[in-house]
Each structure stands twice: as C-alpha cells, then as structure tokens.
Image (cartoon, rainbow, N blue to C red; front, side, top):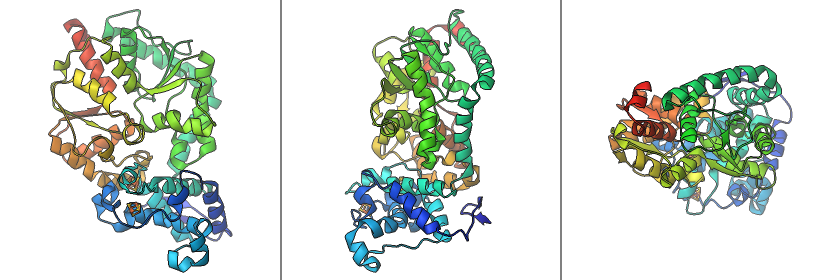
Length: 447
Ligand code: SF4
Ligand code: SF4
C-alpha cells in the first residue's frame, strides 16, 4: 500500500502487516545503549529550555517539532520497558506499548524530516538530554521496518556497489584523476605535480566525488611536498544517516582496508561533516577500538601547514567580506572550531563571525541527510531560516564552510532568502586561491 508521508513523499508499506509494533519495539531495544541511556526514560524534566534552541522550531513555531516533543514520541516507548515507574503507572508517565502506522509516520517526520541531528538542543539542555540519539534510534528502527527515505538507502547501496564492481569503476576513475592532475599542473605551472592513487604514503586523503574536493587539496599537498595518495573510494557514508550500522561499517571498511594496505600514518577526510564523524568517532565504536592510524579533517591539516609557514599566502585575493559556517559534525560534535578560523584569518582580509557562533552556531538546516532528500527541499529551506538570518546579519558576500551538504544548503538559502552571496566555498578552495595568488601573476592568469 502506498502511503503519503509528511512533505509529499510516498512510501510503500503494508499497513496490515502483523506485529509492526513488536518489530519496532525490538528494533528500539537493539538501540538502547549507553548514549541513549537515561535520556530515553526519565532524565528529561520537560522544562522546555531546549524548545527555542532548535532551528526547526524557530523556523516554524510548531511545538510538535520542538526537541522535547520529537524525543517524547520515541521516549514513551522506551519508558514502558526501561522505567520502573512507567511499568507501574504508564498512564501517569505517558508510557506507551501500542504503536500505529500513523505514529510511525510521525516518527518519520520527527526523526528524518524535522531533525538534522545537529545536537544544538543537547548543548543547551541543562541535563544534557540526548534528543538526537533518541531520534537516531528511531531512524535505525524505521530503516529496519523499511520506512526510511529510499534515496538515502540507494546512496548507501551505490557506495557498496562501487567496491563490488571496482574493475568497472577503476578505469573511469583513473581517467578522471588524469584530467584533474593536468589541472593541478596548470595551476602550479609544474609539469611534475601529481595526484597519486593507491600508492604507499603517509597520508590517505579521502575526497568526495567532486573535483572541488580533489584539486585544491592536490595543489596544496604538492606545494608542501606531502607524502599522500588517494584510493578508489570517496568519503561519504549515507548508511549513517539511516542508522544502518552493518552497511555503514561496510562503506567505512572500504577506506579503512585501503589505509591499512597502503600503510598510511594518517587518514585525512575531505571537507565533509558526516564523513569526518564516520571515521573520527563512529568507526572506532563500530569496530570496537581505535583505528590503527590518525584521523583528521583536511581543515586541521591545512591549519598545520599555515601555522608551520609551509605555504605562501596572499590574502588580498580574498578581499570580499566572508563568514564561516560551522558544520555541526566538525564544530559542535567534533570541536574543530579554531582550525578553519586560523586558515581564514591568514587567507582573507575581512572575516566576520556569525552570532551566535561556534558551539551555538545554528545548523544550516540541510544536515542529517536532508540535502539528499529532494522531496523535502521545501521543508529544509524553511528550517534554514535561522541560518539565513545569521548570514545576512554579517553582511558577508561569501560563505565558507567545511561540509559539502552545508555548502549545497547555504547556496540554496542564499537564493531562497535573497541574500547577495557571490559564492559558498570550502576552506581548501579559499586557501588555494590565496596560495596561487602568492605564487605570482603568471599562475593567476593560468587559473
Ligand atoms: S530535553 Fe532538556 S531542555 Fe529539553 S525539556 Fe528535557 S530537560 Fe528540558
Ligand atoms: S538535534 Fe538539532 S534539529 Fe534535532 S531536535 Fe535537536 S536542535 Fe532540533
């Protein structure tokens, strides 16, 4: 039976299938862990402090979409089995055992459409209630029930298929890299500049699929004469968004196995929020221990190169006012706040902070996989209103960010909210421009 979900997406479900509530409860139980813990039962006092910290609520004024209300949809089911008071007085605590198809549709809205898992509510909750962990548990449960957005599962499958059909992909990939290598040589005026693939090196750099995540970094790696290589695989891991840990592990393992085979000392992740999270702290949890190499974002590496004075930099090429958007995974969750700011301070003349900033910076509204879900574009652009207001208030005409999803969303926010933005680019791209400018006018012309 085709069901119409909030936002117009359709999904095939069997409303008459027996045992949906039992299956859902069993899947929720699998996800009851230390992180969910007391947040799933009685830690939340319903003080309401988190309500207007959530960009979704701020953009809509809809209390149903506030953190506490979204968490309660899931919490009432955990309470029934994990809270003694709820076992005895379920009506008093609001604990529930039954679960209808309509309620599962509400989960889809709460956990996928109306939550980017940004954790701004967590850093503002006086008790540290892990609302996004509850909603992530709901995402995983919905995936197990076949109710997750199809596109996210398809993107995860595509990443796995690339490994399974590597022979088919490798020729095309190497041809593309050859084209990009020529571009890097032109930019540097250096016919010996290289983009190594699958070579033993100190650094395995893991890009996304776009050239803008390979060329600027290759220019800089060549300039500092880094020992680096690409592998055949990109960094993104869409299975994470749907809480499908077996598939997320499989996608991550493609890269981890390559890093081990090539004997690298460090895995450097492209400017991608969720990929950074996947390798930096999710993979050690998935695989039961630290990875046998260091994991950093390319932004942390660029910061090191700048601080060590390894790069010539001419900030006058970046004279327009710029502002930095903290991707939630790198910033609020990963603590990478100062590294991009130091690079921008060196590579641009007029850097303006958003208000609030760093751990309190607003999510762009496109995180948690929302950018990939075209059926929910209208909602995510609505939810991005607080971010659009922040950007407009800076007067910046360029936005710099370290995540491709944020970049995509902020570009669309500029159009939707009529902000006069020249462009939205990564830290790597901004730095590359400053570096090439410093290397001389001849190279600037070749660019
Ligand atoms: S999640 Fe935290 S801030 Fe929000 S209502 Fe519960 S206790 Fe209060
Ligand atoms: S994680 Fe972000 S989007 Fe989700 S409820 Fe909390 S503040 Fe809102």
